[in-house]
Image (tube, rainbow, N blue to C red; front, side):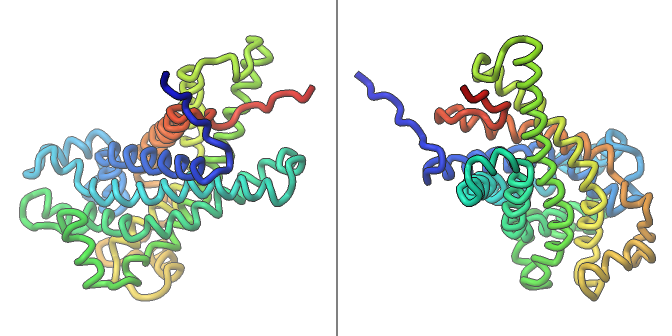
Length: 333
C-alpha cells in the first residue's frame, strides 16, 4: 500500500522552500509570457517619438519590421532569469518574514495588526528580491530599448541578443555600478507595488470569502481546490490593477535611467530630476504626462501578471498539500 503524502508543516524549511519554488515559477513564467507587451511598454516609455501608436499599433509596427514577429519577444531570456530570482525572494521571503513577524509579536497581535504585518513583510521581501532582479532587469531594458529602431530595421545588432552577450557587455562597459544603477528606481517601483500586491490581495481574498460565507452560506473550506484557485486569480488580478497604477511613474523612470546609462552622470535622484525637468539627448523632458506613457499596456500586463502569479503560486501550494493563500479566518468557538 502506498504511504500517505507527508504533510508539509507550516513554518518548516520545506514549507518556505516550496513557497520559494512557487515564487520562481509564478514570476519567471508569467513575466516571460508577457514579453511582447513589456517590449511595447518599455519602448513607449523610452522611445515615445517612434512608438506612439498604442498597444496594438506598436505591436503591429514591430511585427511588420525586418525582424518580424520575433522582435516582440526580444529580451525574454533576461526576463525569465531575472524574475525567477525575484520571485524566489518576493514570495519565499514574504512567507518567512510574515511567519517570523507573527512569532515575534504574538498570535493575537498578528491577527489584530495583520495589515501592518503584511506591509512590513512584503516590503522587506521586495527589498532583497530587487537586489536579485536588478542586473537582469538592466540587461533586459537595454536589450529591448537601446538602438531599437535601427535593430528593427536590420541596420544594427542592437545592444545585445540577450543574457549571453548582454550581461558581459554591461559589466565590461558599466561595471557592477552600472548593473545596479537602476536599483533605486526599482525599489521605488517594486516596493510600493509589492506592498499593495500582497496587502490588497490578502484583503480582497478575505472579503471574497466573507461574502461567500455571509451571502451564500459557504465559507472558504466548503469550496474545492479548483474553485479556490479561481477566487485566487480574481483577487490577484484586482490587486494587480491597483498596484500597476501606483507604481507606473517609477517604472517609467527605471526605463529612462536604463536607456541613458553611463551617458548621464550623477546619482539616481539627480538623473530622475534631470530627465523629469530637462530630458537628455533625444529624450524630451518627461514632465507629469510623460510619467504615464505606456500606462494602458502596463496595467493590462500587471493585472494579468499578478492574477496569474497568485494562481500559479497557489497551484504549487495545492500540489504539495498546502492551503491556498488568505481568506477569512474561521470564527473561534
